[in-house]
Amino acid sequence: MTLREPRSMPRTDELALRPITADDAARDHDAVMETRADLRLWEQSAWPEDDFTVEANRADLVGLQERHAAGHAFTYTVLDPASPDAADPRSLGCVYVFPTTAAFLARSRVTPLGDDAWDDVQAVVYFWVRTSRTADGLDRRLLEALRGWFAAGWGLERTVFVTNEQLTQQVGLLDRSGLTRRFTLVEPGKDGAYLVYG
Image (cartoon, helix red, strand yellow):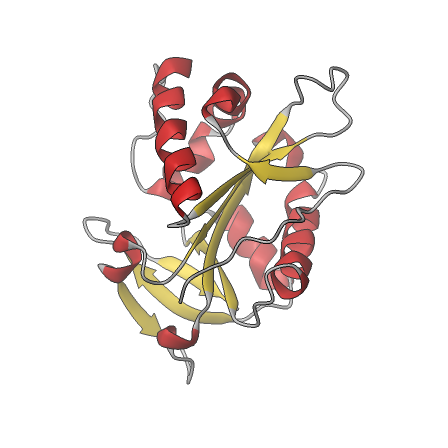
């Protein structure tokens, strides 16, 4: 299935989404480095390393921007519209949207936990918010905004949200959200499983 990005993006008093670009490197780097302990669990890797630089992040964002422009996958920065400097809003996290045909997903081992079929899934979503904002529930409010956006904006009925089983804070969030665990997913070369909610 080909995903078609809607024109409208979620925006509330405390968060706004837009496609990420290489120009977001510094603000995104600040959020990544604050959240690096969680991201290492999420990624099941050493990324981001303690010496991860803004320029290395910029190179990563160039790839994400190109993939987004080509419509292969979509990455959004989550920004704080209430930042004191409106021209330089603070990054609060990221959202990643993939079709099930994305290369890493096509190579992954997906196991249904019930009667659901992976082929019926329309979009696969990963998201994170900076560590300092999980305490006030921003991740819950972002999830609520995303669920509404995929239903109304994207016109999708079968979107799933994915987290790593080791990221207990996000697992708890998804368990409490009214979503149900539908699949487990194991990526090539990674030992732990990802939990897929829909």
